[in-house]
Amino acid sequence: MQKVLRCWKAKFSKEIPLTHNRESPTCQPAAGVTAALTCERTTQPADMDFSGTWKVYSEENLEEFLKVIGAPEIIVKMRKDVKPVMVIEQNGMDFTCTMKTPFCTRVNHFSIGKESEICSLDGRKLKCTVREENGKLICETNKFTSVREIQGDEMIEMATAGTVTFISRSKRA
Image 1 (cartoon, one colour):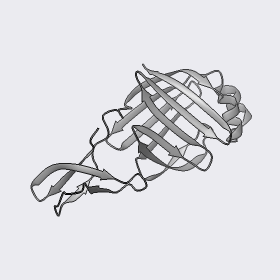
Image 2 (cartoon, rainbow, N blue to C red):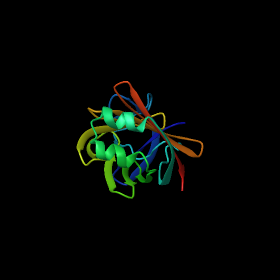
Image 3 (tube, rainbow, N blue to C red):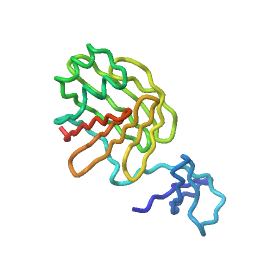
């Protein structure tokens, strides 16, 4: 899969090959491309289309995970019997993720490579930076690391806190 930079200078527009450093959100023209252009990463890999409504059908280690991250006992009890619905709106590298349960709805906004503030299930605010790596969304907070990916017609999230890994499997609704 070739990623590209979409570049503009005055009325000139051209797509050129992309060299992207995973450690930094900045992009540079690939070797051999010489142009004095202002470049902005505007496309996502084709296999990174998370948009849609996702219904959770399977969860592993949920209670243990919630306890490790310090969720209140009432949240642990309420959440264990509920399979949430996730609505993800993806516009290039900008995302809005809405988690709906009978008890609450949580909306989080983030952009790939930029620090964001997300709201946990129990209302706590956490700082995170989400990055894309090989079509996966990786979110790192001071409490846990979450990896979300599309595998076939499923979305799988693995969130790890300490030695506990929570696994959630969803299908498009």
